[in-house]
Amino acid sequence: MMTVSYNEACAKDCSTLENDLVLTEKAGFDWIEIRIDMLRGYLVNHTLDDLAAFFRTSRIKPHAFNAIYLYPEFLSDHDDAVKRDALLDEFLLACIAGKAIGSEYIIVVPPLQRNPQGGPYMGKWEETYTECVRILRTLSDYARPYGMKLCFELVGFNRSSVRSIEKADQIVRAVDRDNVGFVFDSYNIYLNGGNNDFSPLKNVQSEKIFAVHLMSGDDVPEEERGQDKRCFPGSGVVDTTSFLKTLDEIGYSGMVSVETFRPEYWAKSPEWVIETAYKTTKKAVTDALS
Figure 1 (cartoon, rainbow, N blue to C red):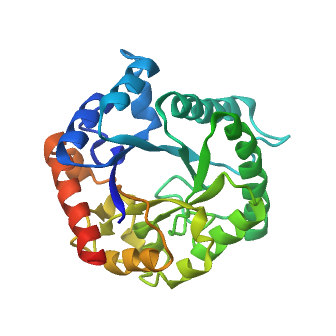
Figure 2 (cartoon, rainbow, N blue to C red):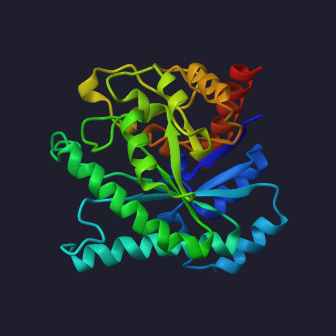
Figure 3 (tube, rainbow, N blue to C red):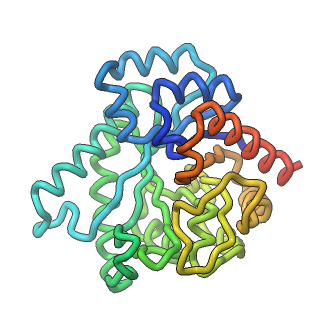
């Protein structure tokens, strides 16, 4: 049976990692995905030893760190040193923290055009493919001494360089490293043209699915679809039941993590967000697989 996880994005503007640790365990989650920015906030007054001590005595366990956002020149000969060092510092912090607390995964996002008003991603697919393969192989080498694995995440809207399951699969197959696989996100798949056809998942290497993100989204015109339109499963336009059933058919039995970036939720209490996140996600998984 798939287990349920909480991604800290759900309450990132109304909570802290300290709060999330207590509330996710109380709610009943099996896992927590830690945001790197919220980890940095935690480390202002705590240490990684403190965090490791919590997980040694807690039922809830750490899963993936979120997230590393790639850009095409990263770790190349023509990279910007300041930009490179800042992102590499984020990545190495996740590696060091993962080894300390028993996490094994880092979410890695392909190059995006980050400005919502800035139009579609303009890079060519051939260049995206080449650069993503190069970067993921390099990060794979960096991650290996720490025992960390990389979860490559497609993003379906037109500001993304990797929008489909098929293209993400091409990249991961070309990387061909045992510590590089996927995280599949129901809403990010849907964003590629309002797509509720999850059958292409049947063609990927199922053993390379290291994590799953589950949520639905508002029914809005394509030009208004964005990460802020994510909502908890149980309402919205994403066929989360089909998504989960397809994963079950290919033998996936790992974690399912709820991840929203919804300002409406950030305006509520962390207690409401986390309790509602657990109830809706648990119900979606149980109903789909019973």
